[in-house]
Image (cartoon, rainbow, N blue to C red):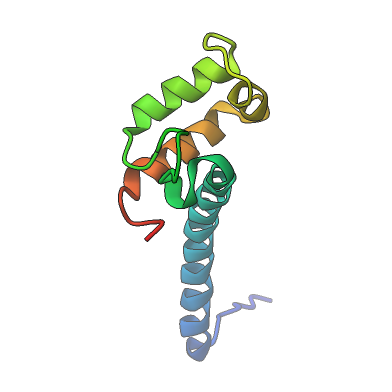
Length: 111
């Protein structure tokens, strides 16, 4: 007995929509993760990385500069009273996400 199972044609748009939603959700999750990680910087560096005081502004710094600086703090190459302790919990990938977020959103936040 040869039984062929075929999806009804009316189900095809639903299948396409589910696939596209899954792709869009994956992209949104990555963006929201970078934004979430970068939000922890606001307490000291200001909303969007634009510092209201003497702590350095990190908005519009290049991703490479931010990555190097954060890894130097984390690895103890640069002394700090706060940053070294704060950044110790971040992986290389999380540091890259934060750096990419501030570099890519230059001047668009905190206004």
